[in-house]
Length: 176
Image 1 (cartoon, rainbow, N blue to C red):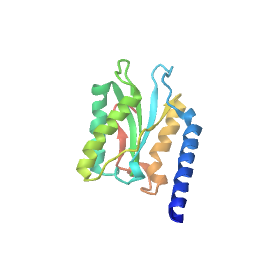
Image 2 (cartoon, one colour):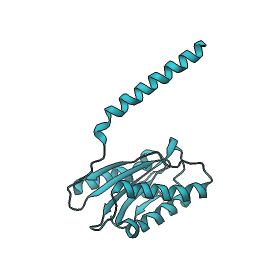
Image 3 (cartoon, helix red, strand yellow):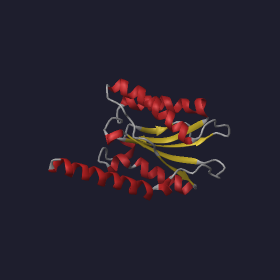
Image 4 (tube, rainbow, N blue to C red):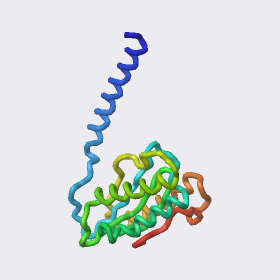
């Protein structure tokens, strides 16, 4: 075996070990199966695979809005405020009392439907989304306000606009 091949195999073994350690270290971040809040509001973040800057475009904005507008009828989930960044999206969502699916199913379907349309319209290669997503249960009005301020200011912090209200890829669907 050549020295380069030995070095490569060693690197692969170390990388595999690092991945196993990282996964076990984050096991505590698993999604809770039951939330005991009367009407929970979730703060959701989904990222583009490879963090490619594909999202901050009017065509993608229109696709996302259409899918969010149909989410209540399809799954019983309402979408509130959102901000679409070039490589990720933040939005708030809440289930209706008769929601038919868990958040993980609803977001998974939303990602599937938006990916099909966006990739076709952009002429981009799959996958659009990274596997999984981040969610946080909003526990108070103060928490909701803090999260929204953070999300709303994202384009300013990224240097994309001078004022948050100038970012064209933000809004709300069913609730503020």
